[in-house]
Length: 83
View 1: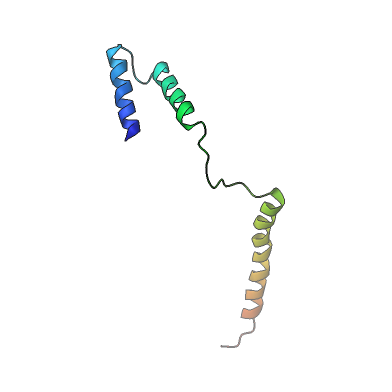
View 2: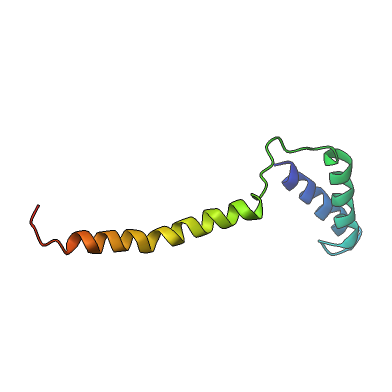
């Protein structure tokens, strides 16, 4: 809601000054407002990518596990006994 009010205000001011909207002046006003009111806004829980070695282990472990599991399933299904 605050952004819609800000947009209406900026559109009205631009119309009053015979400028199109959006324009460079309105954009600069929005950036300055963000810089003034949100410059010290910190995120509580920042999420970072895992280290590359951990990421590679998380990717390659399932890839290496799949052929082993397929082999076990084929080997167990060759038994031929009904269970």
